[in-house]
Length: 344
Image (cartoon, rainbow, N blue to C red; front, side, top):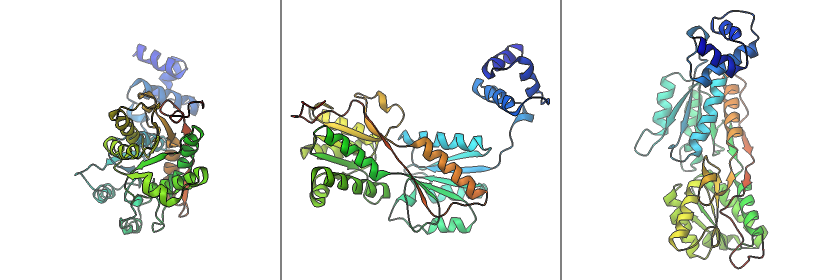
């Protein structure tokens, strides 16, 4: 016990006597000091005494797509931590092919009396889906917030990255390196983020290279799946059309694009430059380290929680979309266009 007290005191930066007072629920300890000691317990892996455990304010559901794409666990972690800090217990519900549908997961969470639900890249992002499911949920009195995707038919707050600006950042970077044949590899057209990326890409290519929208749409945009294999297939088609750079709608697709280039005996970035999207964990350590558009995950996750808690508290946000600006992170997968080596 003495060893444990010393460990906790050292971690919290307080005396062992103070730790003892907190653990025994004694008065005379500042709230910030008490919080430091409790945080030290958590960091060191000690269980909090039962009397000190915060009673949950309630459950909050978080429905995400599969967790193979590391951007979804990263977002889930931010949201989960923000909910826990506010006293709520997050419940992660994941959709998997052949598993539970979004509607089934929603029903399960509602049956368990959740205080609210956060949807990430759900059916609200699919322009072909029936949006009545969200109105039915609202009629049941369940607050919810929608991340990644927008529908004018749903009366709820939305949290999104600026997909159009993201494509402008990517195209501007590649044009500055001398690339004029730039392709875009992305998911199925029915998704709102895909449509917005196309709009941003077409506008940037028009403005910076003077290409016609018809030419861009027919030759420089390739749809596939949001997977490594999907990126490989889409990028392969674009490389066959003599693209010297490929912008991908996810980091997973970008890894597939690098594989597609190497399959053809091409080097990245010497022969083909590749730009990803997300800046998911560990992507800086790929070979080569991936140039990508960083999705503002911490800001988006915290905003989703803050907005949901306002809904739960009875001061709902207006039917609006909070849009967060992404940033370009330049690493080793982009370089001057082949035949334009005078550029840095």
